[in-house]
Length: 375
Image (cartoon, rainbow, N blue to C red):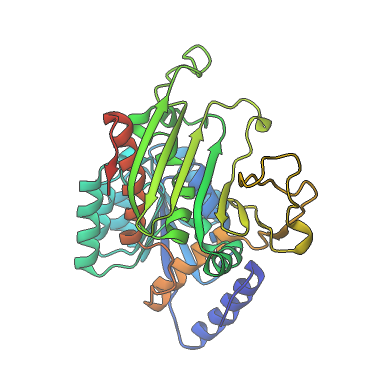
C-alpha cells in the first residue's frame, strides 16, 4: 500500500487502530527526550496519531517538558531520562538533543533495548558514532535519523531525472542567518553550519549521487562580529569541493552571515550534458532544457567554435513542487516500523545517516588542516 499524503496515512492509522482494538492490542508508548524546537516539530505530528500513547517527556528545563504534557494531553514530565525510562518503560523514543550531547543517552537507550529516532547530526565524533552504530547492530534495534527531506515527493522526480540524464557536476549552496539557540553559534557544540544545518543538503547529495570520495574545504570568518552576535565562535561561511566515487564533482557553499533573505538563492543545481535540474530543499525541483522552448539558441557575436553557450532567457522549465508533509511521513514511518517490527521502509537508519555525518565532519577536518580529506 502506497501512502502519499498525511490524510492517506491518518486514514490508514485509523483503520489499523480499529483492527488492533479488535485483536486486543495494547498501544505502545512513545517518549521524547529534548522538548525544544525540533521536539515540538515531532510532537505536532504525534498528536495526530491515535495508535500510540504519548507517555513521557524529558527536558533539563522542567517547564518545557510540562508544556509538552499540556499539548499532548497525556504523559508525564521529567528532567532525568533514566527515571522516565524506569517509570514509563517506553517502547520507542525520539532523541532531540544538541549535537554535543550525544553518547550517554544513546548508550542507555540501546542497553534497555528501546528503538529510537535521533535528530541529526548524530554525533560530532565519528568514533562515538561508530560505537553507537556497533551497539545498535549487536542489539538488532530499529533506528531512524531526522533526515526528513529524504521523504519529500520531489525526490522521485529528481531521481528519475538523474537516472535518465547522468549528472556531470553540481553547484550547491545554503545561506541563512544565525539560529537563536546559544549553542548553535559555538562550533565546538554545534559542529558549525555545514554539520548542523547543511547536513540536509549533503545527505541529499549522497542520496542522489552515492558515496563521496574526497573533500577539500575552506572557511571564512570576520563578517559576523561578536558585537552583532555575542558569544559567536563559528565559521561565517565555508566552500567545499567534493569528488564522488562515481566521478561526479560538486561544490557546496554554506554561510550563516546573511541578514536579508534576498542575499542568496539557496539551491542545488545538477548539471547534465543536455539539461539541468534546480533542487530547492523542502520546496521544489525544476528541470530546464527538456522542453523544446527551453533550449537556448546559438549565441550571436562569439568566436566561431569557442563553445560558448548560454541559458534561454525565456526558459520556464518543468516545475515539481513539494506536495506532502514529508516530516510527518518520516515520523510515521519510524513509528510504523516499531509497531510492525519491520524497519525496511526507513530511508535513513542510524548506520546510513552516520555516513552523511562522516561526510560533513571530513569537511570540518579539511577546514582545520588546509588539506583534502579522503573518506
